[in-house]
Amino acid sequence: MRIRGAVLERIGDSTPFADSKPIVVEDLDLGEPGPGELLVRIEAAGLCHSDLSVVDGNRVRPVPMLLGHEAAGRVERVGPGGSDLAVGQRVIMTFLPRCGQCAGCATDGRTPCVPGSVANNAGELLGGGRRLARGGVPVHHHLGVSGFATHAVVDRRSVVPVDDDVPPEVAAVLGCAVLTGGGALLNSARPRAGDRIMVVGLGGVGMAAVLVAASLREELGCAVIAVDTLPEKLALATELGATEVYTPAELAERGVQAEAVVEAAGNIRAFETAVAATAAGGTTVTVGLPNPEARASISPLALVAGGRSIVGSYLGSAVPSRDIPEYVRMWRSGRLPVERLVSARIGLDDINHAMDELAAGHGLRQVIVFD
Ligand SMILES: [Zn+2]
Ligand SMILES: [Zn+2]
Image 1: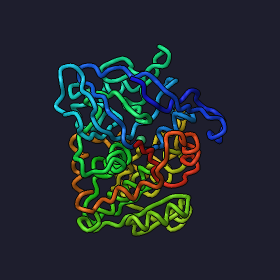
Image 2: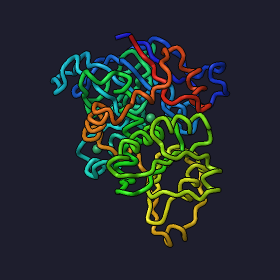
Image 3: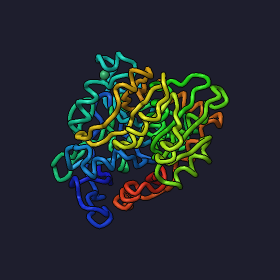
Image 4: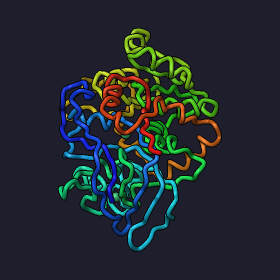
């Protein structure tokens, strides 16, 4: 079938992207879903820093690639052999499929699915190959999702079903920002009663971690400390439930520390700030994706002397089919107002400008909505 989608043509174009236009919105051919696959009509797709990292070259992926890995939609057709999901079911895309059978999947989220990672790096679906093409030439999938399009063919193991009461924008943001930020906290940092929680870097993922932390305040009695260089992000964090907010300079000057620290900025200075602000006995969880060449300076002695840990977490070390329903319950109860992470609703054609906004740190989640 013919679809309309946003294809990244070139990596590392000059900024502003609104002028260089590395992403072209155009018509493409989408193949039929194969066995175990679904055709999904996309309803909403969020822009995440990991999309920008592909555009600016920090995360090298094969091009041309139809971008977008945070999305939600409805099943429109199922592949041969059927599916446990019915046509019309709303699904949340997740950006790392889980085969359920490999050594990675056996770790319960701690390490990524091995064939899922191989497929993602190749720009293919978990079942192998590509379903996207232009003029007979294949186009790569982005993380098994390629959600910046009217439709997508995805592996069943890339989606989690969700009830109709969860609006598409909320559903989309649950699939990356909340799963990653919330998982960093709940699956990796695992705060205990009385711990202080800190989030360094307040993009969509970091702010989702703040929201999840704030939802734990009554239960754990924990302080929620938010850190960012931008004053407007700090003001928003306060609105979303942070109890203390600091710029990195203020944080260092006052010597503020926490036991559960999530770094979600994806740059080395933020990582070093997070490690330095981790209290004795505490854990730094890093979910940011800095340039692969980047190296940090930290004190091994401070780790040893204070019994500190540093942990990396991909996709919030989540098992999406286990964790997403829990976030949905928290959202339904009003404890996790995920819709507040949505800062702008845009059209597919605004995508290059939206990447500039993301690079500038403006807003939280810009969500592409499809009618
Ligand atoms: Zn993402
Ligand atoms: Zn696996």
